[in-house]
Image (tube, rainbow, N blue to C red; front, side, top):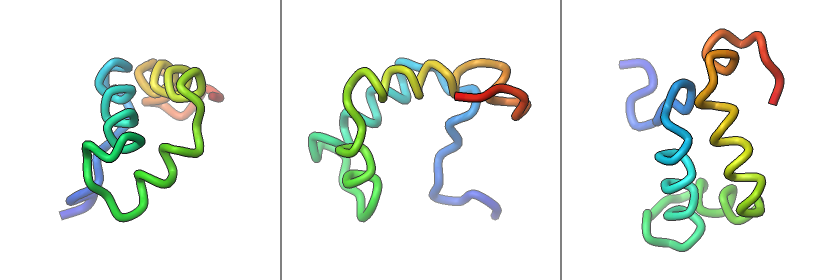
Length: 65
């Protein structure tokens, strides 16, 4: 099954993405790689990325983050 085990960010509510990134950053959500990636972003960057992925432009690939 394509994408099995990997969540899709496009169209996901920004609050959900932000919460998951914070869980990765804090260690509340175990991961092999995403926890390290999440720690590389500031809270403001996480919120900005989350907001962009929630937009229709992120879903169509026509926008830029």
